[in-house]
Amino acid sequence: MCVSQSEPQDHGTVTLPRHCSTTNQQQGDKVRGRYRKVVLLVIDGLRPDAITQDGMPTLHGLLRRGWQAASATTIRPSVTVAALTSLATGVSPERHGLSAASLQSLGRVRGLKPLPLELKRLGVETSVVTTQLGGSARWLAGALLRMGGVTRLVPAPPAPGVVVDVGLRHAARNSNAELVVLYLNDADLAGHAWGWMSPAYLQAVRTIDRALAPLEAHLEDPDTLIVLTADHGGGGVLPQDHDHPHPVNDAIPVGMLGGRVMPGLVSNDPVRLLDIPPTVLNAFGGAAPAEYEGRVLHEAFMTELVWA
Image (cartoon, rainbow, N blue to C red):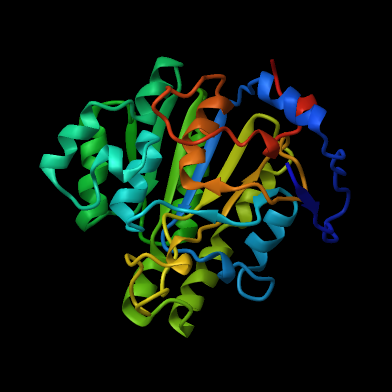
């Protein structure tokens, strides 16, 4: 594993990371952590190069105090239905067959092992918090609920700050072990309407960034893991789209925050969207099914703080 240490910002006392070594990596491969809560924040259409000190100061600062991948990629085709289904099933579109809302393809998903169902076997609930969905996203959410595994769909008004607040309040009230998925689509809507990295897109990104301030309260919480990602980038071929094969459309952010996450580290190891489902299962003490195509991101965690 190859990592680089970022300089911490002036946020008071910051836990210094231990030096990374082959021994630490081997230890991390042998133990699993047990979190009470995992918050998976999916920001639809967020390009990694939009996360700057000027454009997204809150998220930029949070990631500098947590763990992040130097580069990460989504699946192909880089479309929302395919990516969210891969997050839900742990496999690529070649396996799950969903690149568009289709009842015919849904039959293939039923033969897989969805992440919410695997978590349910561990006694872990899954809650999805989002605004009122439309189109393919609404269809996919309903399909996952019908297939079983997802415990509840928590509606929220159409504002990023409210979605985050509703999700965190729900997690605090629910005493059960739980995966809480927060889905924000404001950046994607702006990208399709005005183009990725356009002034309107960057304004939507800034609005999302302001909504993420409450996450800072969980930076030192050893029982909560926050995983941040996007389903795709955008503007790689066409300024208002993201479905063509292109590195800019493929690139996504992947980062983690929490009291047992390696602070201030940027990993140069290859990271994919498909690494998130096995990492979430590992966080609750479970093992990924053999069919899952990703790996557990062990390098993101402080091994001395992982519960055996």
